[in-house]
Length: 399
Image (cartoon, rainbow, N blue to C red; front, side, top):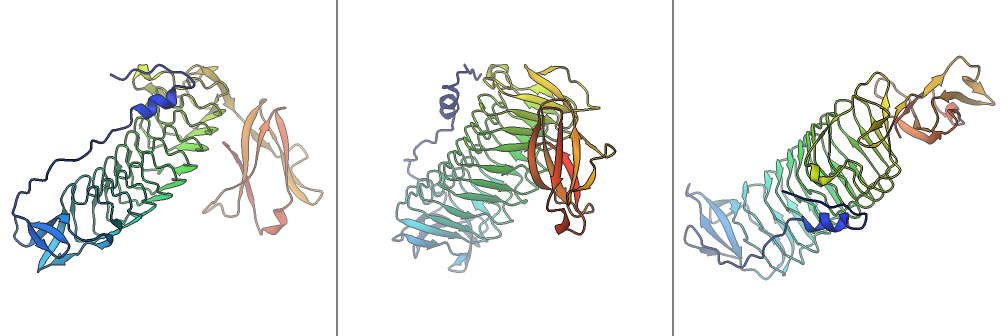
């Protein structure tokens, strides 16, 4: 059972305290087959008699290229802990022939700066690069389908590109990556496990794919500079505290079809002002001990669309307001005035909107033009750039 007592100063420490702790590995390796030493590597022969698994390294360090084959044997595996605590390694290349990688292979290789994982490798093992405190660059090929628990925990990666071949990002996989500023997760990923990006204090932007169904417990907690987030319609299981203590989070949007919201999901987000829902009011799920959805959020308002159900004047303890802006086309202000195309937008008071434009409705790419809050229930928009395009279309949406 997890019990959380919220305080505005204590939630960050609580979330930090529940991070996975990785034990030091000091046990001697017991090999299943006799060790053979060839060049810089030790290895064992696999049961098929034609492939081998790397078990250790005897080289002097620096740049290490793991061979795809040696002595007529194909290298298909790396045993767990094979290069653990090796401070002499500075870079590594893993060949595509390797299909079986054990846990904590490069754990605490503290001078490892970059890793190249060749196409063909299917899995990044648990704790594979955990506490590689100099690892700033890694390439993840399209052949990888799984990123294991703690794979890059506490690595100083500056960016992460996760291909669509990956279906699951493991627990604490990128937790504590303090220099990670953006995270590109391609369509194909279905699950982001608990605390996967917790304590990524520089993470400004993350776009969640439309294939995502699960966001784990505290998955993006303590991401202090994360600005906005959109929950895709595919998500059916957001986790408790998923975005808790994200100090810079201002807006969150739930796409139509997203069916759940979790306890403490946006707790202690002091700058959160708007949460926008495209569909019906989602049901609350999770562990009640993790507190209300919007604990310590004093400025937040929920906005919902006309025609959706389950709403009243409050939702999960915060004000709920109908989001109802409309572009006026028959009030005499729609069209070209003073060489600028413009129109009035009206709605109830204090509704936040973004005005967007695109040039092709068949394949629209909407560009934000301006964000505004209709404090008096109306706003006149004009576009001085309208003559720069053969055709331009306008729309209004959630900010």
